[in-house]
Length: 279
Image (cartoon, rainbow, N blue to C red; front, side, top):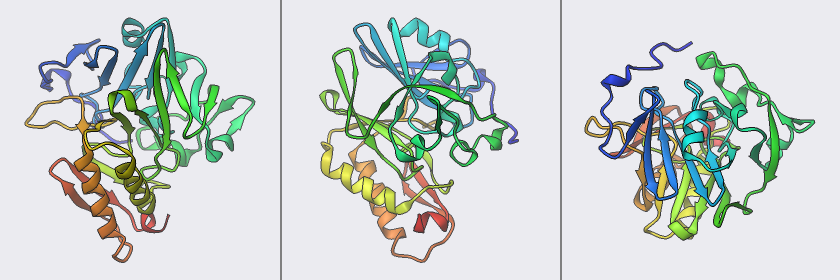
């Protein structure tokens, strides 16, 4: 098990508009009905997103599980809260049981691990052994396929299959607010393309697709952040960051497979393995 998974929250400097709740979570209003929920004292600096309208809320990712996110969601969410994990990595499935049957991306690899309406991720999907996190089994409330729409009250979120970081990753596109909830497809800091199933070819394909489909003023909210100038804030990237990632991946794919890390821009590095060249 990895050591130093947490640091004292008292040592963290939060942005002025990020409020500390429950002695662990950083909470920031993205707009009047969307909040980012961060874990700045956890080494992966997870961020989940609570998207609300009317009586409904959608929690996109349920946190690392180092602390229970459920009381915070109960305070900020609406009468009905639905959890939707972006992918099966352990740091996005913490607290999943607290929200009842989950919405799950309707992908063949996830259908293959369903048994009687429940899912148990494989060890390779979950990767929790690195932090001694046991694999959960949880109930599926509904399946939603790529290119379908999740409705949260009157809000419409288009489900996009965005492999690269992992083959089961999905993101949400909210056209009305020009916002991409990118999860782990792109984020600040060390971007992982060296884990099982990660694929540089998928990264290139999806980057090019997003650059074609998204407006240049897109706001990309991410599932991980890093301190900038010593301050923790909800991580936001943009169209130029997607373009930079596309260019770096395209350059790498011209080389022989290898394992390493290269800078993407001043806010991101890309970690990759020899296997991610051919996946």
